[in-house]
Each structure stands twice: as structure tokens, then as C-alpha cells.
Length: 118
Image: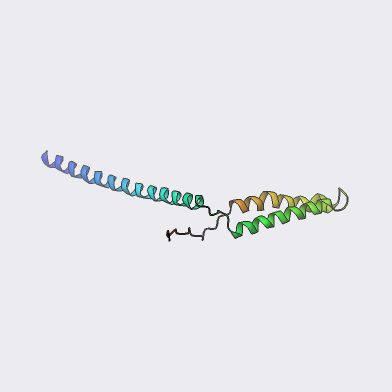
């Protein structure tokens, strides 16, 4: 009976340490995500804009598509091919695809700037 009790106690202690190790690893991963998120907030709060050159280029192309769409809309009679078919395609692409894409696009290769305090 004592051998069984000792064996069960060893299993319990081993499992307890494994459980604590797993919890510790999970907490380390969660804390790393929290630190990364707070560093990102601090970087953007420091005055740097979150938009890159690519965002502005995509936004400019979207504005250009919208202008071209309205130009085609104004051409010819109201029932022309340009007014009924081409212009709506340009407007939808500009408003619904390119402008939101320019806002949501994030350059993954961009590393945060390190503040050295010099």
C-alpha cells in the first residue's frame, strides 16, 4: 500500500510540475504579445504616422480611378456605353477596393524605429 501511495504521489508531483511549466510558457507568450502591442502603440503615439509611401500611392491611384469614373460618367448621352458600363466599374473599384485597401494595407517588412535616446 505504501508503494502505491508513493508511486501516486510521484506521478502527481511530476504532473504538477509539468502543468506549472506549461502555464509558465503560455504566460511568457502572452506577455510577449502584450509587450509587442504596447511597443507598437508607443511608436505610433510618438508622432510617426502608420501610413507608408505605398499607402499614399494606392490612395492616389484610387482617387485617380474615381476621377476617371466621373469623367466617363459625364461623357456622351446618359444611355451610352461609357456612362452605363465603364464608369460604374471605375467608381466601384476606386471607392470599394482601392481606397479601403490604402487605409488597411500594412507593410510587413517595416521594422519599428529604435529610440536610442541620443
